[in-house]
Image (cartoon, rainbow, N blue to C red; front, side, top):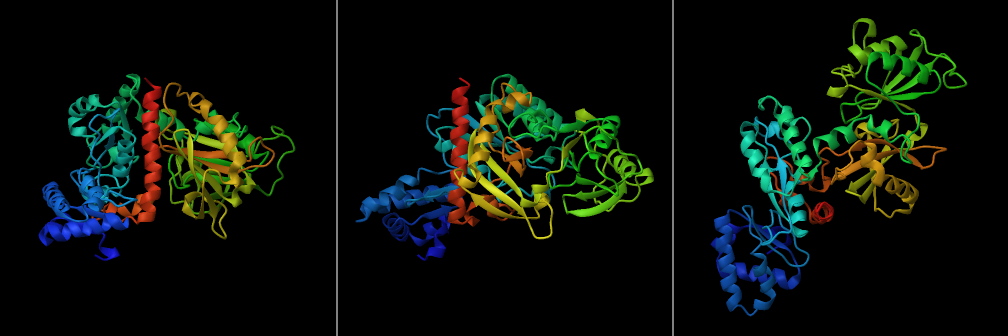
Length: 495
């Protein structure tokens, strides 16, 4: 059997005969090479029996024993046949006596693959099965379940048996066309009911909203990882007064609350006029000119202060004039309750050096990613960047790590989330800064269904985990195993 044929159909293996199958698996176990099988549960059961019979009569029975034992790792997706190290391309079976019962909650939107671009061929999100396996390896059981808006009561009853829930639903999916009206609100209310009952939800709607909102930067402004001169605007009057005062003193960054790829994040420079010497010495006039750069694509526009403010409130056209931006402004629309807000921070000129992403699993740093703008671009926001990956103990980021980890114990309280656990998988993006207690400050948090990129090759209606290389699989599982350990650890702490 060639190296390229390490993944094979259980049905094909059965047809080849038990002696052939047993020989393959004996060789795999003896050589330390991993072999995998997939197929229907019936095919895998048949293959299990065939290999067990072959092993009993085989001179290589001892070598085959590990492979035969692995046949117990059966699930609806198939069985795994490991040599050390080993992998599975399907969900592991739950422990007979799990320490806790958990579930990964997903959702399938109407409309097929085009409306569910995060799914694999089994119908679940591409990184869901590895996360479940991480929980199982940590001693918990883990089911894969879908939220059913058309049977909300049935779903609510189903989740009563679980000790904790890991939500893996992409933002916006519960509001997609064809979904039961009000599904997002009903789901959020149900999740918060679990939180009130002291059952952890990773991450709860409150955590996603309050940590993911741009005004989280205001709440941490007095921490080591925060920027003290950070303001939030929720009304047109607050925006007009604050922006005119701040931008008269120094270049600013205005960040809308919605979006995740740099749209509605504007770098703002005063044109044709000197900045005032002291903060508050002067205010900008409606006719003052601004140079503006939007971070999703780094395009530049020139507008008056009045045009910029009106674009932020009402969108393009009319008194706002014409805009090149492909996004419609109206950043305060709906008010604070609907997420309408803008955050105002000083522009940090060292943003051209890139951003540093700290990838966290609860309170543990897993990886550091340096996102550096590609030549000719100002910012790494929006995907216009090159990535360099570092281990958590990288000396280049020793001071940043120490400062950030010092802030983490107070983070949930600062967000108004006392009593909620830290997100199970989240990120903080940092920007270099001068003359500050920490070498970098937070530009954004993300805890809304953060993806596990190592399993990205499994994403697609005709793809599954077998498409993921061994290198990516084992690195991805290192992260998922930590997720499982931290989920169980949190439940231990909440006893």
